[in-house]
Image (cartoon, rainbow, N blue to C red; front, side, top):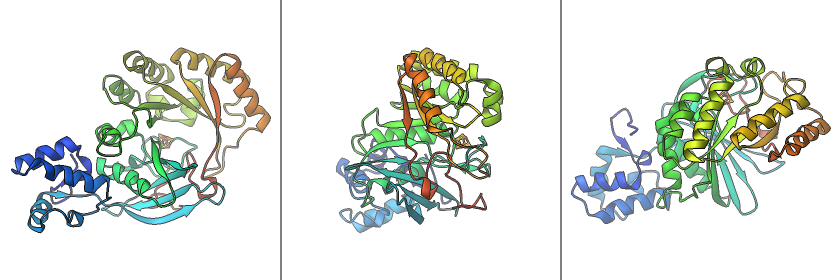
Length: 353
Ligand code: SF4
């Protein structure tokens, strides 16, 4: 459980049952823990002092042992194209992460970060450009979603994707606890298929997920169908090559019957040929996975370009003709650099937008 420098426990890092246990240990009645949980998730309380139906003396006593993570929005950018909102948050130690809120008609999806920066350095991604600074705590992941839940422009929060900065499965404990809070009926109460973890192919994390009962969808960022191309785009592939990553995904599918999505960013003359589409179809069918095709976004150096539209459609048709569910995903928030691969840490990357 996350602790701050004064060794206090973070209420946002605890499940309601853990809050109940803590209150019981203090000899408090059960309804007190229900009150605290309600304040956190029904009223967005950002301090113990805000919990005004708890006696002041009790609030003061609890504050000696507990705190509530309170990330601060430093900068908010709203897309003129699609109302996607990108928020730069400052954490308690001054580090920053980005979160992207995508409103649809009457509801919304939030894409949260799980690490400050990223160790894996995919060449098309701004998040990894400055390396990994640190893992986020459960409370820091959960608080991004609380912001989204209470955003006045967003509508009801119905989906959470852990696809922001960082590799969620390399920060497994904090990520898994956050997911349990997202689906808990007394917290965010999201449906079990409404939370998605994205991985760059961190095989030990996929295997761990395969042995866990975490109710979550998995999205594998594949982006190439051979080791040579994939290692060039995603250095993690040198450590966990395609065969190992796909074996881990097969284990997950076998153990958990967890629906798998393959994310494939199409880059002109890099991974967009029809033989590659045929290979991708074979991989997808072997994993019973659907495929999201993403048009490459301009990032950092602008080294990669999106293929022409007709080539994207032909790539999709090859997959569909082979029997794969394949969709072309709209890139959202491009004008505020909130699209896939565009999130970054303002403290780590000099040319932050
Ligand atoms: S794509 Fe994901 S794994 Fe790769 S550098 Fe970006 S955040 Fe890290």
